[in-house]
Length: 289
Image (tube, rainbow, N blue to C red):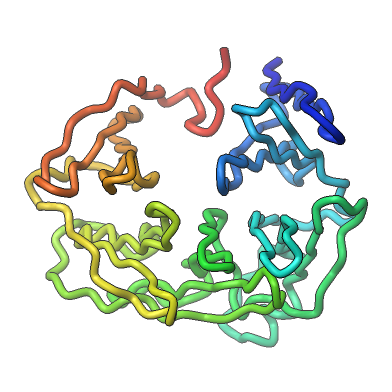
């Protein structure tokens, strides 16, 4: 068995331990914000527990259990500046049914919100216009997810971004940025990514390795592009900024192995980091010890 424990901190913070049976259960990192990390535990089908922890302070917050279990669960941790509270947003899929009919999609989704400090989840009437991916970025008061590639046509134009205003508790849709370079990587837009770039929402086109930033007007602004000769063969995932200068940490997967690289934004040079990669039999989300 594997365990992750956040020991008791000050005040009302509590101790929470996730015990994982390697054969049937899994711990996943579901997002982070301002040093807070959201972890979920699932039994292979449904999320069984949720914990938000601050590793440096050894503080944790265990969320109340969801009253319903659906086929898929997407999460987002955000901060409501108007009330100075954290909120967890949970979007549940009632089934794995795929449809391009918005009415069908809306009926298949459910949005639950938990306000930290309370002991329950509240269902809200708003749902996103499409199913979304697991990865989420919180910036400028909103959570941002990519639309699931199963629910939009796979085209050169990329995938739209769903946003959720944490204060107003409403959803919206942003068109993907328009690429300016020729395609040179043999991938489809299902591999495009949203990423936190020093507190801003970044969009990565993996077929051209172009980057954009989302400004306050919800417009895409070109940021940078990786030089063709420095991008290795295989799947590339941009994890975020390595430092305040904006150098980027990249996870590269090829031949069943993971390697971590740092891309220097100023001089366009990459170098291997000192983070050990994981082999094919090990999850990149949790490294058992």
